[in-house]
Length: 262
Image (cartoon, rainbow, N blue to C red; front, side):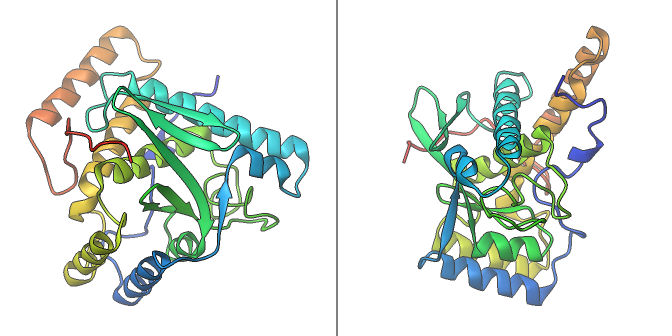
């Protein structure tokens, strides 16, 4: 079974930072690299094909791809569950050339890449950064190949990421991508970091409320799994009561109208 007996590791499941308040200098630096990133920078696409080509033992590469496949399966189970409220119904698919999300509206490529923006994010305590067509990640120990030793497959300490944590990252960042919240273009990146700098905050940023709503939904979904029927029903009622309270400064649950496929 790939499901955990404990889900404490997804308490802050996607992008981790040591405190809610954001230091000014790192935020300005990250903002600068993000905006410069739209002008173009060297990046390494992270795909199953790239992982197979990486200069690491093939058995290790195969296990990394297997964990990615499991993460996609977990994300799809969440999308089929009653806990999905912010993202639309659909299915993630993983092929040799990368990941996509598709539904009756269209198909969205979800590119995972290592680049300077992802690396700067890692330096400041994050796991990844949303982009217009996916998300960026940074390097992680043991620093052999960007295709395998990155914060998608490994923690910042170099341990293997569990499939549940990978699924959480995919869902959080895809919410950014699909709903166009956050650093998905130059004007929105400027607005994102202006709010972070002027209000000295991250967790309650306007552009993080819908992605963190997905993260909360996914966390509740994981905790619900494997419970007896009575507990599952109680947890779902508690979730409905939470939704009935409306948006908060931490989350804004859907459903929302989805934009057309790009």
